Image 1 (tube, rainbow, N blue to C red):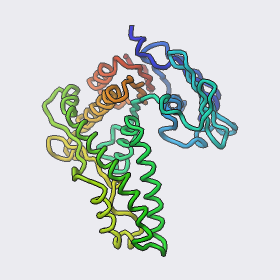
Image 2: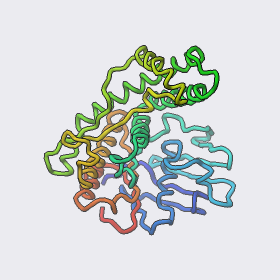
Image 3: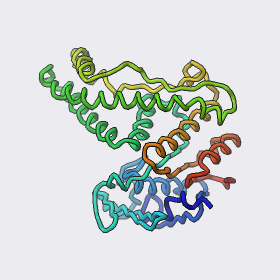
Image 4: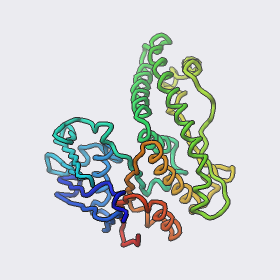
Length: 336
């Protein structure tokens, strides 16, 4: 029996989106939530995600609150008997764990999650911004300092852009923001490239195990070497241009992850099935890296992805995640 790999026992929702109250028991290694669209299946995964990661993957709290209700609450019971609660009172969300209350989940209580949404299957062809967000969420789960540096970077970027749009935009006024962007930007720049290298080491091999064909896949991110002084120089070099357009033209916020298939851009050269195999391979690598870096087996949340995959890829998904606890939603019964 696989029960030693079980992470959560049950989750209960109150006033969460369309649910008045809902209880999901996860007795088995794999829990299937079946139903028509619009009955709130994704919301159940979202509630679990909030208690494991600290915030929703798709909305802010006031959008989650059931219409007409003045609070929402989610209770999660882990398999080891520990309990965690999140309550949103219309203004702020608090987490409760072992009689302690806090506005954020303590680092040691965050739990790794591999989340698979139907839109992930369009990752190859989506915008650079969405791809950046995707990898940011993934890397932030692996490294707390990635998450913290990215937050600080984004705050400094916002300030610098506001200053560029004002009449006070001169080089000296921007200096302190440039210093901050160079500091955090360089950290993130180098971490991203290290992680992409690591993914690429096993990307093709994982892809081939699904597709059963000798194609080659990789992720490309400009691999220029970056240090703080170079980063700072680039910001200063672009000052005039930035002032004219009113925003910062160089930096990690412009990074573009690109998928390559047999040496060509995958968007346009890989078939739909090949693209899906690439994304599946990426998900398997995510789970593996979470085990390697965090020493925990992640919980797998699959939101209606079975309907988007053919039988071969469905089988691959089930086999690769057979050692994990899976909670999945589907419009029809699926065999797992």
